[in-house]
Image (tube, rainbow, N blue to C red; front, side, top):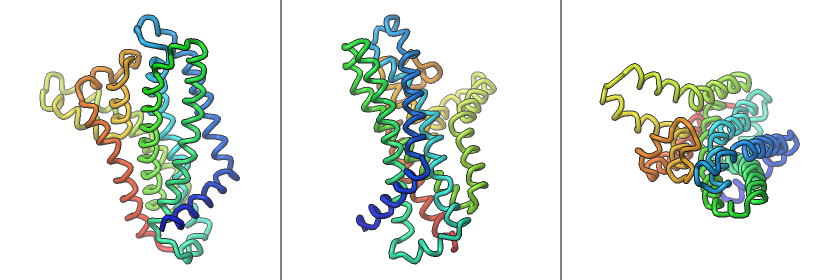
Length: 274
């Protein structure tokens, strides 16, 4: 089974290299990370934190938007593209289970995402340490941001596979993927904020708010990293919530989402007929 998954991942990596996905993902992360590294370290002295820790807080805000977007763009046609091109029947004739196909593609896409994130964060760290050698104290926070970014990316890769299997057309899957990104990353928090304002002093909604935040992998990712960061106040918006929700709860939510999405993708893929 492992050899079949690795063979599928290798083939998917070759396709991604040919389609320039690797270069696009790496370039996007590198450019945005360097820009935030230059702009996000300005308040270092006022916060009393080292330069890299402040940069990590800024990179958290970048990752919560860019990592899900990259993941969805890589995964939305993983199944729908095979259906439209008519290559799915040929793919299913190989002695590889559908779950193994999904696992191989997840491994390939996650490797591309990991490379892009690693390059972006690495360049940001180099820039911060070059400007202030004491910033090396923030390397553990950067490492934490790296592996949680991969968990976040895996969640949205799985979601992209689900949408790809359900829509069966790349154009429809692309529209659903952008819609999911808008809802999960942009509109979800706005909706919670609007609900909190509308509820006024309603303690029931306030009590449900932590659970609603943990139900979104993007919020779980942000809350976990902010709760563990020394520069929480540098990131606007969820600093207060990060102090009220236990870090372990946010991490548990973030860890469960990839498994749940991959299971849902596997079930949806079984319903796709050649």
